[in-house]
Amino acid sequence: MDMITEAAQVARHETNRAIAAAGGRAVANKAPNGEYLTFRLGAEEYGIDILRVQEIRSYEAPTRIANAPAFLKGVVNLRGVIVPIVDLRLKLGCDTAEYNHFTVVIVLNVRGRVVGAVVDSVSDVLELAGETIRPAPAMNSTIDTGFITGIGSVAERMLILMDIEALMSSTDMGLMDQPEF
Image (cartoon, rainbow, N blue to C red; front, top):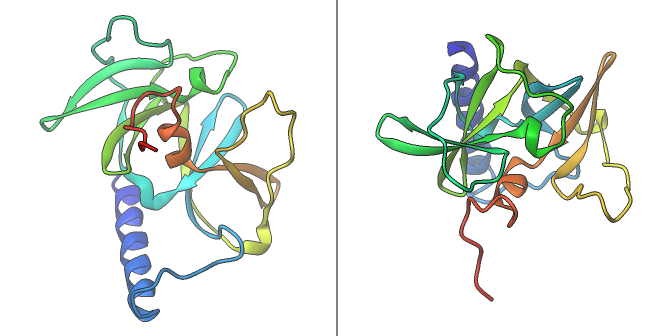
């Protein structure tokens, strides 16, 4: 797992260097190319921006919170920080959510808040160029696909690329303060 942590640090360094080279302005991209941490939820493989990943930990049973939705498994104490743990398998409607030795928690930094996401397993870190990423397909309006940014193709693999910040910040998650209008 140290290799993934190092990859995240290298990605952060390279992003900061690119921003500095652009005169402090964020570099605009037509496609959401970049480095993605890939993981499995059931039979599907997903990818999230590596810059949102703080660390990857083995799954440990969290302290349950009364009256919380089923996908909010509870909280853990991570070096003095109380971290809510969300089971993405339950949140995204996977058929099963089995806890075994492959089950891990991806610790994320989302809008300045630390949140844990339970996944079946972590695959690897991939760099995807814009031409390997297709737009997310249009879906029925009853299906919330607002957090899907695209579909990545790597050899025979299809990756569902997601905006983990948008997913974790959604009102139904109840994890982030919502901006007042």
